[in-house]
Image 1 (spheres, rainbow, N blue to C red):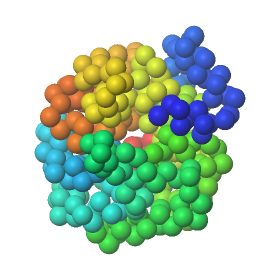
Image 2: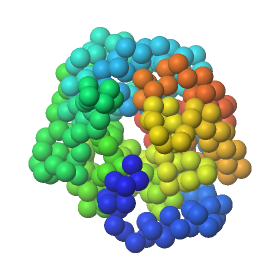
Image 3: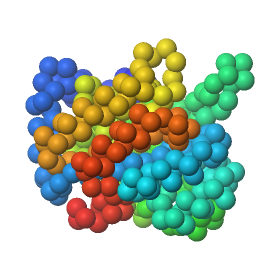
Length: 296
């Protein structure tokens, strides 16, 4: 993913933050804590969102959801509209249990490559005409209203790591503002250190995803640690990174743990549930709506 981010983020300030993450990681976290306080946070919060990007997620998401509810977590779901229709009965059940859903666009952005026996990414917003991106966002909104009967208030861009330039984010927020959305959660951890865990620089409120303790500008995602091959990471590494992140946030005393996973990557991974248990013991579990209401 970093190769895509390197191409997407040309801001020299980003390079300076990457250098600081290597040389002064603790100072970077102190800056984060200061920005969190200015944004209205007075404690630690934990949001877990689940990106349901393949049909494999439909088969396991109810099981994952039940375990998360047992832990006291309040899961948030981001499902492309085409997949929302395919799994309508399943996702309707999650919605009826109180789950929050955010717009994740309409078009499926993963496909199964039979030759490789693995999923591949497609439909990157940064490679599409802006009007096509706009129409995909609008179609995702309409699908959530039609299939689940909900009025979405938030959005996450597909493959958001490749859509990080300020002009891209201003465009994205402009479309979301047309829909009267309250927030986006489509930015990498870099933005949380530059502008805070929630900020309004691009039009509406943006809530960056959280990073790793050892590498603050890198996301702690389920694909890298549970599903990818050849990356040198394991479920045990996920647990250790999550534990280190919890220790760091405990020291700060203020902030937002905003992590996301894909259900099909984690549904039988005890390292994931143990990590979530650590996070929810440390920070108050909320969804995005509750988080924004409280800090407002």
